[in-house]
Image (cartoon, rainbow over all chains, first blue to last red; front, side):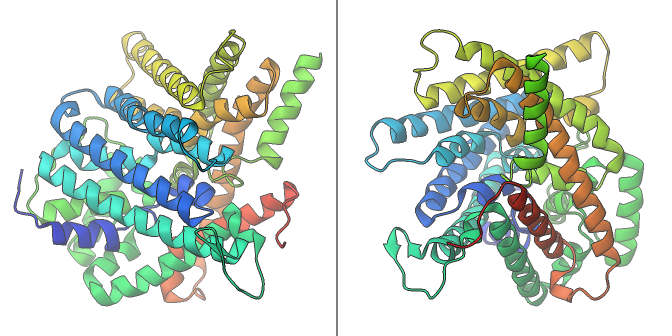
Length: 262
Length: 197
């Protein structure tokens, strides 16, 4: 396993070019459903970031030799061990009353797909430093999307920002509903794609080829896609596979996964 | 008879009105991923419904235990999560030891069992004060809602892939997100949500 990967490079790819929410389409649930206000989004993003980093480091250190089906349960239980005390504190000691939605979505972050994907694709296959860097970069990428969507939805949907009234001519209640967030995410993803094309044209082509379904692809079909992508672009294009391929391109050896899916 | 009708009404409500995937975003990432594999819809519907029903039933029975209802929400979350993890591990052990299933299958089972949709069902049952029959209906409805969402996304994304009029920056993931947003808007209409203040 290689340690010669700079945080800057991992950050550029993990947080921006392959943003977990906008490109890999993982971790959508809490963003769509619970980032209706800026403060709520900030609280959820901080919790998810801590969770992702902690579970990734633990996975890299202790979980890698366990069967995948046991690891997946451990991600949930470790996530709950982090989230439940936070929830208890908010419930018992926080002066601000937390909404029922927030109460439900906070524990749901413990089972988020972003944790499973990053732990399975990176953490259990690399050393602790790389797992930490990857989780931190992805956590920052998710947090940025949380904060942007939280701010835009609160301003347009409630005419407030962090609880302070903002003077806008019309409020769109739809922005506080999931569809408002999904459409906003679509526009953010298009913006990111345009920026990515300028920042790194090669990676942009990779994303053009990206298909999230490779996760469920049979091994034969994956090989076919891989061969075709290699012929066309010199690399494999797939959202989850990109992540692994990106690490491979940086000299990190990724052994074959026993389960073959995620 | 009343139990069956309650179960069916709750299942229909969960699928078409409350649609937990499109109206609440639960299991959205998994639905988008599964939408690219129509052959797996049935398998996922069965797995999600199965896990949702089993965890719902156990959590629903727990809610009747004196003192559990008064437990802080954080405690309930820990118990519900523990139950889901225990059910998943137990089923994996049974499938592995008795039916000799592959690790690959158990990985797919993990995606179906350990996701936000399945985990959210006991919370929703608790907050809506669902009866035992309602809880089973809600669990069944979660699986069907998931497949309905995945099928709608699948159809739409196939059409989007063929459309050459989509601007370059919107092709692929961005167009898919906007499309799923419009689907969600339609279900918001079923749920009688108002769009303007």
